[in-house]
Length: 122
Length: 111
Image (cartoon, rainbow over all chains, first blue to last red; front, side):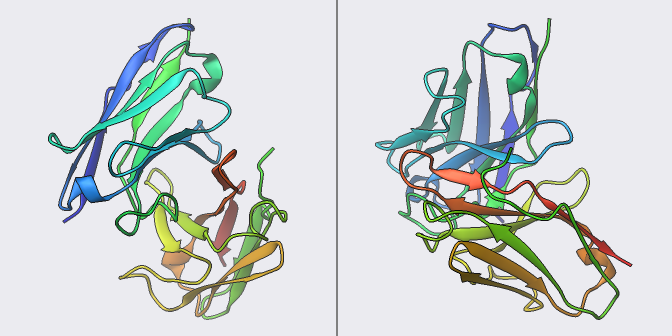
């Protein structure tokens, strides 16, 4: 069974930093592009970032570019998102998700974790 | 303001069909086959229902179907069931500078 489990969400002050993790199982992690998607309280979905299966391609939404960094460790079956220079508008539930098929840069988000909550507040 | 435009609400009675639209531009929906639809029940993670305009993942009932015409994509739910009541989001690839865009979501109510 494919499973994605996010962790690392906390309450942090504006300007602060934290790192989110996504531990995966049930599939060959090193073959799949992975995404981060967030959802602000009571709001819709916002694509945040993706990283290709081999880590060579990373892409970001304009709202987080230069502040967030996506990475992965294929040996540890783990995905990460480093969040720096946090703003109140970054407050959201952050989901990790996998592509439907191997070696696709972008098609869709086929399987989602349950999310981890980041709250940016003073 | 979301990049893709969806109606905020839609409704239908059990057994009926309902179609949800998703309007983009020639820079996203109109140019790429990477349109997807997600179902989200309250307090739950989104679930992929349709990808690449009209493909259904394994396990998604064939009551759910997708299509696209020009800059507008559509999700049709046939034979509405109570468990179909949820929020539905469309998404599209939008090119390498603005990769993934979502619609604002449509709340589907089964009357």
